[in-house]
Image 1: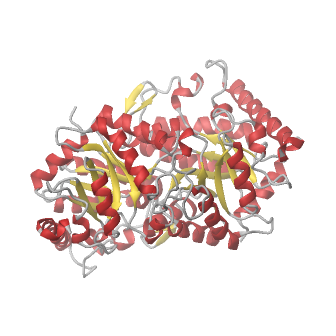
Image 2: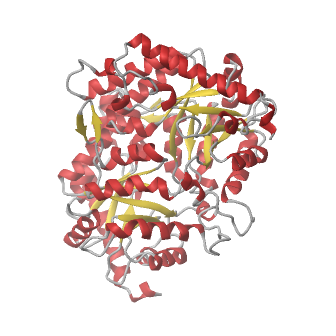
Image 3: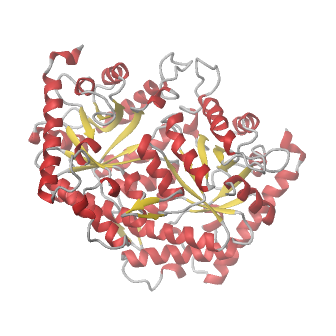
Length: 312
Length: 312
């Protein structure tokens, strides 16, 4: 079975860039044409509004980027209708040849971690049948519960050719509170201890591309930490957050890449899907705008990766 | 608006014990009568199997305990059908007067954390209407992303009379990996820094009962850490995990309580719902078994709280 990391490298090479479109369904921010004439917001209507919106976005970017990153929180805010729309969105993305990274920052201990891993990346036994619940290609997981909480995810990745991105250093100010704390045992920040675990767990999942299917989430807002994490985890794919709406530049995102131009993907959500000037634009103009926002991001990241400043 | 902590104390006083029944839907572990004659596992069938099972469990325990704790991972493993069953379960529990603690260990940054908070405890705007997605009474959240990631949850708790339990020290061996690490700045374990934040954020949400609606998750498997956390957070409600199937004794759970006999709730899942001898028992025998398992737990915890060893 082909490893997730190899599939990701293949997709990046095909489109020629490492940009990922984040899908954060926020009906309040969607253009009027998606919403008008829908009537009362029943479950069926909510599901179809989100599905229709994402199909438009996916059609606009499917040939441009290697992957999309749906954010579970924004689906969950619409209850089970939102989760049905999440299923629709995963399917629609895969049908268009896009890899899907489910951003839910899940984790728990023992059999509960197993259930999360099987839910998003594997399969569950249901009345004697094996069924896939969400069937994403990769998911984000939190590390606070310890190394053993990550094992069920790694095992499902190995078995199913899927991937995880372990949250190491986030793009918010509050990431300093605990992630950056210097440990007495190592005299280094906590996130470096977790990086060591990511390296160790990822080693058996390194594919032909030289990269592992056990990745890491790193915010590009803190350039120095990002550069340090890049050097500590040479075989790890980094999911770079904080670019765009959260303020990190392409130049900052570039420090998360290896000299081979690989090893990271950069995600942007609102700056792609909700950055349009006129909320009364028609469907075709909206799709054009999403495509232009994506092309602008690709251009910015490509230039930043080409610039010699990357090493600096 | 009545605070969550006050509602919780009221419910505990009404039933006379702090035991919480965990709801982990695992169809493979359910007795045969729930499953037989159901036909192929369509979404509709899966939803009704879980709903029927939980209605039986809830009827068996509703007069005995103050709250139930559905674990999201086990619902998510069944996809959107599982999430519909989660909605059914929350509603069925509330209709029976039980408080609902959604155990999903969610969190993220900024507007994403807001979306999680509104999804489980608040309301979302959907095409001009305010709708509640899941409407639990409380939820569990992870702290790794920092103090600012917790603020949206605290704000929704304040506004809606809801509660959170911040994961501090879990019951697994791996909780030693990061949670227990001594920080250079404080010369104390990481979880104590987070406990200080829980205290600080919880202070404005202390109710008439003297307890805050910002609680903490503490595993009872590590007695010394649990006792320390109890003393550091006198106004915090502790959700005690690790009791029962995970090996912590009633005596260990007891150290999470204050001398007033309040300040903690103890959760047990599998030892209540899946500890039956004969998988071919009939519905009434199953309900009787769930009730007896619950009564046994209540007896064990009540005795442990009465024993003088608590202080030891």
